[in-house]
Image (cartoon, rainbow, N blue to C red; front, side):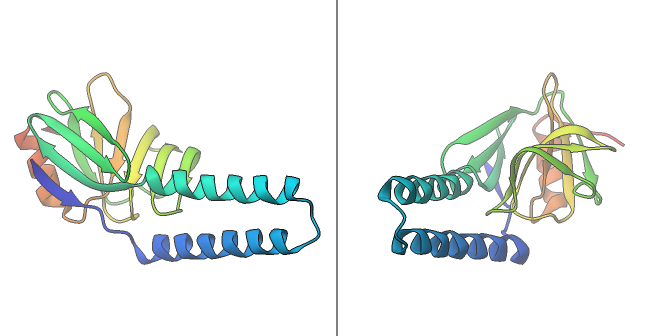
Length: 165
């Protein structure tokens, strides 16, 4: 397997840090008030759980080999068959994306998004840099942003994907 990083951008890093600090501050304020524990504990739990889930499903890296792309996450992975898939570079892939369901900046960009130009697609990236669009056979389009886009595309093609556009 060949591994490709998707580094966390400064924007994503600061959004994550700011969100964690806001959650800690909100929990501290609620817990120090005269609010009943019935309110404070569930509030703290829900906020903490939401952040933990966003972090757990954020993509760490991409692995290419054996005719597959594996998107490694903090917890778990997603596997995509490359044989018959179409791939192309897209400098404007992240422009105009609308989040339908998922994470739009807490530790990553991950989930289901809509783009007027690309349609409905899944995104798995830690930054909004130069992107790669992958259309697997019989599956939803993916938008990925590896640090070394050209080497990533070459690896996908060697494993069975074909260049498009």
